[in-house]
Length: 118
Image (cartoon, rainbow, N blue to C red; front, side, top):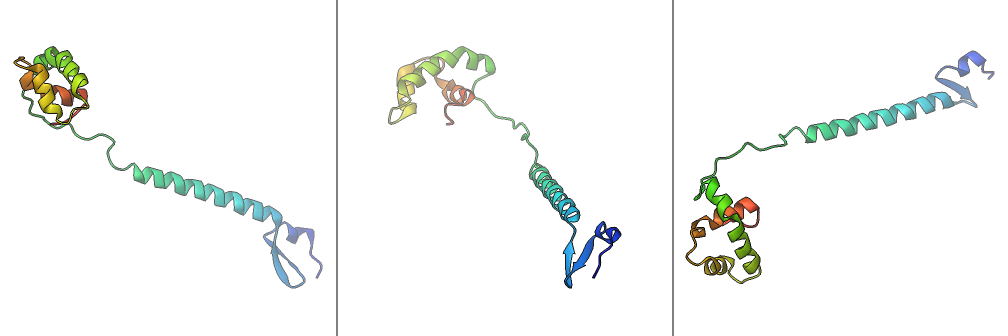
């Protein structure tokens, strides 16, 4: 069968009884497939981020006020540095601090520094 130039520009042509897609159409379809894949990836990322990025602040009950935490921070951090590898960290810190006024703030300061939660 003789194929006219006008029918080559359309979607398909017949050669030896087989239907063959034009190369331009294949290129356009592959580009469209890539765009659809990219959009699907963007949609997947957007739906994964539908959860809030930040949690609501929760009220915490501290044994010390913020002034005591700032006043005791260095003393408790030094005790932590001395005891971080002890078998019982809290007993070691209590021993280092002894009768210090900061003893009741140990858990608050360690939590505030991000070192440990009691």
